[in-house]
Amino acid sequence: MSKPEGPDAGPATSTGDEAEVPGRVEALRLDLYLAFSHWQARPPTLLKGGRHISKRDLKALCEVFGKPYDKDRVRDEADLPELHFLRELMLGLGLMQPQPRQRLVVSPNQAQSLWRATDVDLAARCLDWFRGPNTWNELARLPGVEWNDGGPPHETSARLAKARERVLARMFDLGADGGWHPWRAVHQRLETTERDFLVPPYRSRYGRYGYHRYSTDAWHFGGVRVESEGWLRVEVPFIDRVLRSLARFGLLDLRFGADAAPMAFRLAPIGRHLLAGAPRPEEPEAHQVPVLLQPNRHIMALGPLPISDLASLERFADRVRLDRAVELVLTRESVYRGQRLGLDAASITAELERLTGQSLPQNIARDLAEWQVAHERVTIRRGVTLLQTTDAASLDRFVAAAGPNRLQPIGDNLALADPRLNLAELGRRVEVPVSRPGPNDARRRWSMDAEGRLLAPPALATLADLGRLQRLAEPIAGGGWRVSRQSARRALEVSSHDAEQQIAAWRSLLGPGMPAWLGDRIRVWSGHFGTARLAKGRLLELPEAAALEALRRDPRWPKGLRPFKAKGPLLLVDDALLELLESLLSDHGIEIEQR
Image: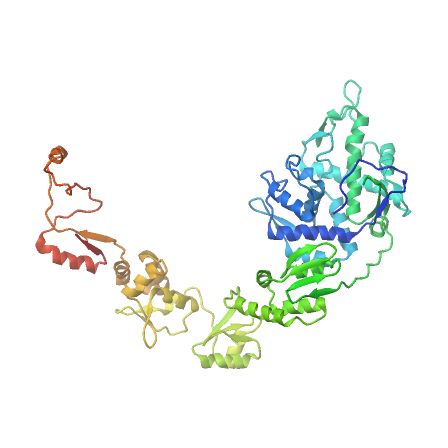
C-alpha cells in the first residue's frame, strides 16, 4: 500500500535524502486484489449505521496488509483512512455490492475485467469515481478537529466533489509542464486565489471569522477558533489527502524526505494523459515471470505475477506467501473450490501448463484426475434438459440421430440433452413424438384399483411422478406400483411423511380420481390415531375426593394403588368384550399396550 500519512506538508527544498516514488497503477491493483480475495473468503459486516465495517473485519484486514491495529486508538475505519479509502473505492468500482443484513459481498465477474484492464483504463475508472459525488470524505477524523456531519449526504458529497475539482485544477496549473513542484505549492496557490474553495469564511455579528461557526449546513467544526488556524487544520489536510489519492491512482510521482513526508510532486505519464490531454502512454511490456510447478504441488513464481494470472491461480490454489516471490499450493480442498466455480481437471491442467510452459508432473496429473472422479460421483446440474424414453432402444435411436456429444445417456432410458438441441425436430426424424409434461398431467394419467395397484398410464410417467411413487408406494414384481401397509409405514419412518402429508401427495398424483377409502387406509396404516392402553381389572369409583384422601391415610392402603386422571376417553369394559375390542382397535391401526 502507499506510504503512511505524515505531516500536512513536506519541505519545498531538497535535502539530498529524498526518495522518488513513481506512480504505479499496478500497486493499486494489488491492493484491490488483496482486499478482494480476503473478503471473498470472509465477507465483511457493516455496523448498524451502515457506514463502517465491524472492528473484527477491520482487524483482519490490517493483518492482510501487515498494518498494526491498536484497539485503543481505532474506533472505526475513519481512524485507518487508507483502508477505508480502499473499501470505498471497491464499492465505487463495483468490486463489492451491499447485501441485506448489513453484508458486503464481492463481485467475481466484475473483478475479472478489472484485473485484465490496462493501467490507463484502471486509473481512468478510479479517477471517474473520485471526481463524482461519492461517499468518501477526506474530512473524517481530521487531526485535532472535532466535527459533525450535519447535512444531507448528497449535499456533503457534492461539496466535496467541487472542492476536489478545485484542487485538481490548481495542481494541473502547476504540473502541466511535467516538472517537479514543491508539495506546499498547491496549498499556497489555493490559499491566495481560492481561499474559500472548501470552507467559506463566516462573519459573526461581532465582525470576526470563526470555523467554530461554520456557515454551511454540511458540517460543523469544533476546536477551531480563528480562520488562519482553520486553514491549517482543515483545508491543508484536505488538499494533502486529495493529492495522495491521485498518487495512489498512479497519476502523480512523489518525492519523500527522510521523515517520510512528501516534499514534491509531478504529473506521471498517465496523469498527463488523463488530466492534461497528453498522448496515451504506452503500456509497459509484459514481463514473463518464470512459474514453476514442483512435484510437491507447490507453485513458485520468481517475481511479481500479473494480478490476472494470480487471480486465475487462486481460483484453485491456496496462497502461501506473496512478497518478492509468489508461492501457492495445490490441495484437494483448493481444487474442490475451483470445481465449484465451474473448473475441471482439464481446465486446471491447461492453465498450469500455460503459466509454466511445461507438462504437469505425473503425480500431480494423477491427483487432479482422481479428484475430478471423486468430485463427479455426485453432480448437481441446474436448469438442464432431460430426455426420457419408454425403453433403451428408443433412447439409442435418439442418441444416434442427434450426433456426437449432443445427448449424454445417464441411464437406461434417460439422457442429458444439449440445451441447443431441438428435441421436437429430433423426434420427428426418429418418428417418436416428443412432448413436454404439463402441471396437471399426473391428475389425468394415474388411477388406482380397489387393491391399491396403480394402473399403467397411457403416456410416459414423468420423473417427478416416479420420485413421488418411490416414497409413497412399493414396486410390484413385473412392473408397476402398489400402496400397502408396508409402503405407508416406510413413508412415515424413512421419509418422515405423516398420514396427512401422504394423503396430500396421493391427491396430487390421482386428483379427483383418488379412491375415497385411500385416506382412511393411510391413516390406519401409518398409526395416525396413536396408541391405546388396555388394562384388565375392575374400575373403582369413589363418591368424592375426601373419601379417597381418608382411605389413603389408612396404613392398610396398598402402596401401588393410585388414582389417575384420564388423558383421553375412558371406557369401562366388560371382560367378555376384550377380545372384540382388541380386534377392532387393531383394524384401525391403533397399537395396544397390555397391562
